[in-house]
Amino acid sequence: MIASTPLRRTFSPLAASGRTGPSGTESRGGGGPNGGLDADNQGFGRYRGGHGHLQVATYQNSPLWGWQTITIGSKFPQAFGLFGGYGSPCYPLMKVKGVDALEAMRADSSLDVTDPVAVMNERPFSGAAYMTSHTGRQFEFPQRCQLYMPSQGTCGGYGDVLEREPEAGLRDLRRGLISDWTAGHIYAVAADPETFALDLGATERLRAEVRAERLAKGVPFAEFEAGWTKKTPPEGIPYYGCWDDPAVIYAGDPATTMPAAALQGVMMM
Image 1 (cartoon, rainbow, N blue to C red):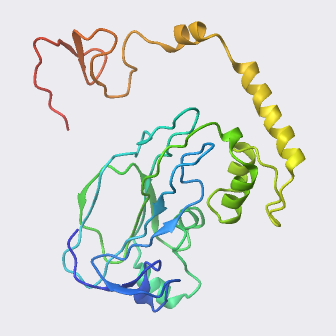
Image 2: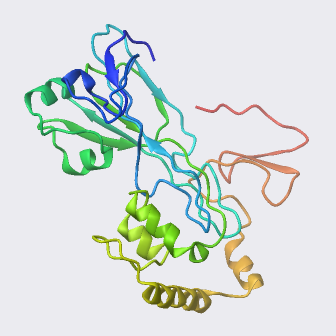
């Protein structure tokens, strides 16, 4: 990333519009990142993984500024759960192009980008192009004051979500770290989304229903393994390495193999 030094304020990505973020701390830097926490950006579990954050970046007053991201955690979780915990979510790259966001926010004080998900769903910038993709982006030179909004990583959860203390789930809901849907459907916590009143009796019944559903879906491990295990890597997913036979190496797809004792070079684009 190459840039001049536009003014920004922590938690306010477009501080040059004249607004002050919650912290009010001024700094100088290349872009204007917004460090915020996005609901459900965590590995669910009895003990949840550390919460990841979202960023909003743009630039101004620079003749040369570029953007590049890597692919870790973009299509597959970068951290797996332990003992029944969920893995971390995948992280998209969100972009708003074809608009000078700073000028638009100066002209309309109601425009707000502190919630990137809301920006993508509500599309508040008239005439802009809204894009999502994986985060494997080659280096590109954007236009002035376009928005780039990536997510950052989190950890996997530890233990069964149904064993998380209901009060802990309620606390996360009250703080905005999980959504109403996650509280009810993942953690099976019954709470009023307006008052945050916890219904312990309903929570116990809801969790009992989820456990019964799990048992109804369960099969003996040998049966599961027979249906799950495949003889070759799946189609459509680049796979490099051995599969069931360590003497045979796959080089990107099931049809391309080589002996482990005679490896060949593979061009990766």
